[in-house]
Length: 382
Ligand code: SF4
Ligand code: SF4
Image 1: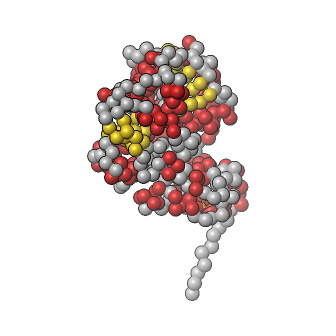
Image 2: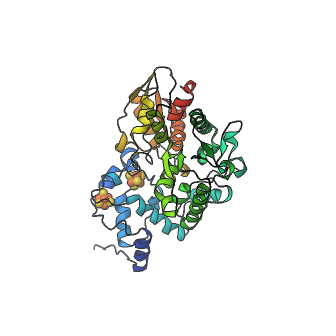
């Protein structure tokens, strides 16, 4: 005798899902293009199905939602969705619902507490946030500056990435830009909080940051990380941020156009550029980093198989930097592509991409990984 599975539908839960996702999943007609586009499935054969997540959300079902934590918010699915469904917004909304039910993976809880207590997701001491600038001539933004350089948590604490911030300060200073930093008063941009689903603290953090930024009088904010940049450009204006927000590659491209950026010669080399998801797919910034690379005498830029809108995610977004996962990673697959193309240098413009790729190349060998900034400021890095 056949038994039929009974699906319990819960009106109250449906209402909560609808409200917290602002109905983002409603236009979905279940074609499955998103699932087929997801790098976790196509590159790692892991069972992440945006279509199924959205279906369960449409029905107001709360079961089987563990896979919402696997998503790296890369938006490969969104750019292909024929119904323009805001898939990442729906998934982040579902994380908020899970957060309210205290159904959050332990690593997400840890990063939330670290951000609350120390102002950064790695739990590094708040008192050491400005160490990266020791011995560097850089103004305190409180003195009144035109440009506020927001360094970000990774750039402030990771010794490997501190050089990117230092190089940028030197390049801007040499060009006479009136730039300053918040130093020890800088706090996390909130991207790491958003991915945990905790909306109340996120809102308070964003409000504090908007106040701190506005207090400097800066009319332009330049962010190093695409994750901070994405927050400032797309979320902060809703909380009153009026300053223009640029990723550092955009700012340097303007300087190139004005003739005030003169990249130094580097050793002759072919270089591949990896588009960070939060810069490229999320914000359409594909050309500025390429133009910068092309401007460096000695470099020959080559495109990887998956580039621009089709770039392969490094796995770091959406909380991926803190996810505990074994086995092969997306960054391994990207490094494999560079190795197959036999390109010795892999440039990118995101601290998470750099950390993930370097983790892969340590295990697998392969290209030297650099930030675009390092090629402009410290040619010896090549
Ligand atoms: S691609 Fe868009 S319409 Fe198709 S299943 Fe995914 S979200 Fe739904
Ligand atoms: S945003 Fe990326 S990781 Fe998340 S479901 Fe879509 S394709 Fe998969």
